[in-house]
Image 1 (cartoon, rainbow, N blue to C red):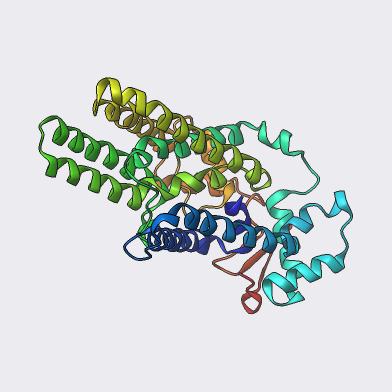
Image 2 (image 1 turned 180 degrees about the horizontal axis):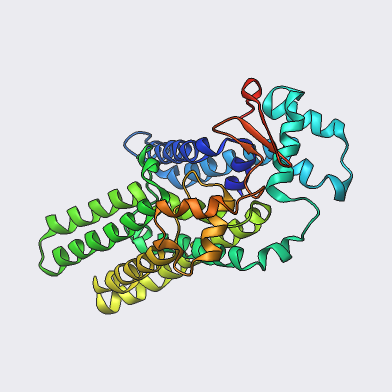
Length: 346
């Protein structure tokens, strides 16, 4: 749920970059704390790592327990739980630093979730959301086909790669991991160790460049913001389940057929999923949900639509887009436009 928490608190253009920074930072912490060469602790290594893992978790749980509900959460549940304006004011002041932004938060929340119009289940049953959930979940599962868990751990170091677009990153990353894993396979079968090492190293680079990060958050951009928390949970759960299943199968399969298990468990699935994503995954970068929904609903092969196809969607767009256009500082409020350049919250 960290992804959903970030969506509520950060501007769209900063969510992915900040997530990547913290991912890279946590990877660095794991490297430093887990290295016997940097922090030699001898025979208490296991106990030391357990403590290092438990303490931050306890601290984080305590912080979450003490934090007030996010402003969007309060507005979303105001009717159901009858939360007062006082609680909303307190939350807005805590997270944004001033109570002046209450109206902006309300406007965007009503625009994003259409509070009170549909249940989460009814929203999920819409064809565009089901299609978005399927594509996002498949994109998430694709992470398990990169062989990352079979080689090492998660890698995501290039902070500016996001500018190329989500679709390009994940597809190029998947194809890259497949090709480089083939290189490693050739190195192993020919007994050329240096080729095998280079292949696995390039696989890690492909994962860090593209196949890693988008797999974790794409679902949240392909479904209605009202049910993001539900669909993102399903997607991430599918990712972890697929990774665990592949890791479980890998050991007995590797004992039977050796390095060819990599071909069956990683290379073939990577190319297969990449082909499906090319056909069905639309580019989501810098697009409001209204445009993404139109692409999913009006095109069977929504991944083949070019950027030039945007103009047809604009004719149908009304208030399905977020009420606050974060980049332009414009508020769309029930058919009217007003500038809030002097009141940029995000």
